[in-house]
Amino acid sequence: MYPDLRGRTALVTGSSDGIGAEIALRLSIEEVEVIVHGKNPEKVERICSKIREASSNKSRVHQFVADATKPEQISRFFETKMPQIGKLDILVNNIGGIPGIKTFEKVSDEEWYDTFTLNVMAPVRFTRLALPYLKRSAQARIINLGSAASMQPGVNNPHYLAAKTGLVNLNKYLSNDLAKYNILVNMVCPHTIKGGAWFRDIRNITNNTGVSLEQAAQQLENSVKIKVPLNRVGTMEEVANLVIFLASNSASFINGECIFVDGGTKRSIF
Image (cartoon, rainbow, N blue to C red; front, side, top):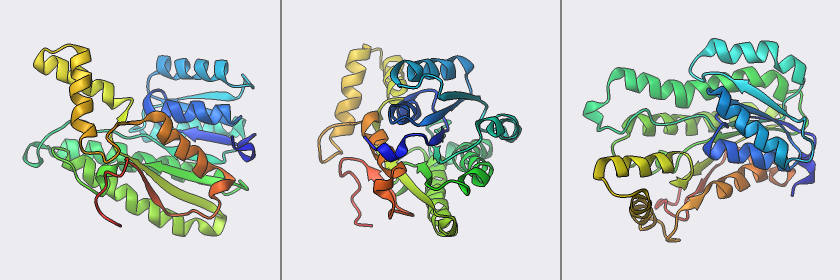
């Protein structure tokens, strides 16, 4: 538990499912007032309901329904709802994803643009609009969610790799630029995690091979953990634990870092 987080306000983008939802839930348990963001109203409400059930103060959760690739929808929330909420101490830029798995030669210009819009421009827009509030906070944090692949490229996702690597550089730039306002900016880079896209990948294996969901899950787990020195797959809770720590005063002299949650998978020393 981090008592200093009590009473803070956090916006977690892309928090209607997966890792983002886990982060939002964990923040609420720390008695943080949470803004849950997502494109699907039903999914946003479902996470808000879970937060109300789990947190001690059932009124401290807000819904932010918007397509992160539509600037006008993001702006509308900050223009109409944020003045009512009144403050913001923590921004978690969790939004992101891969539109499709393809080789370099098969990725279209549109897919490149879409990938950068979701993984780079969406965090840029959320950060720009959040800054007036963060500058007024005594404990301001921006925590960007990246990918272990940003430092050690995988295969068949060049557009995603380029976007996430760009976000690493933006993270470092912002940490230097915003330090004068006492805004700490850090990045969390998970390896493959059991959550969100993990279950989509299991369904894809089943659809492509005809094996059962249980067999597909075992195949996927075996293919991932063999690359991990700890010989297992990480969990959403382990990613959320680091985000909560970085949001707290326990991380008050950590700034501009890109921290990997990968079980030691990254081979390089830098």
